[in-house]
Length: 238
Image (cartoon, rainbow, N blue to C red):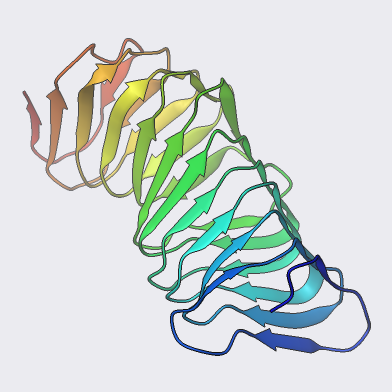
């Protein structure tokens, strides 16, 4: 495979597919700068230093293999599609542009010490998996008012900030394991909130809404922001 940078920059549609079954590949930085084209990782386990998709019809596909991106991910135009069953680890800032689409995995997407920005009108499609924000430095989620996640987990000892006025809608479980979450709102729609013993609170507002029965379990410092219960369903606090 290509071990240097792979840049696709032309008017024609180009398709790259990693052949073989469950192979492991360490590649160079991948950049789609063409109006169309596809990179299909298939079942391969891929590690790359960075990823840029900036072509209206460009499509980076990750299906069943794992994907590790050790630097920035910029989906300016086109699509990042990881809707299969592979785990993803990203260790650089993620930015979604106005016509970019980021489809998350149905397994685990781990965001290691990154800022997540989607303020220009792009799309984040949450899938059925878990997103883990694990930060060793202070990091920020900055979105265009609301963003929906399935299962959401906060780990790492340092603060994660949700920009003021922004709301994270959680359709699955919200697990607060370590660190703090400040400002913004976490809206738990259908499932449960668990606060672990390493979590240190924060100023973020947590809202229970939706119609599903939910459980709020505290095993450490409780959330110190406001807690609002708007749902019509049963709520249990332990």
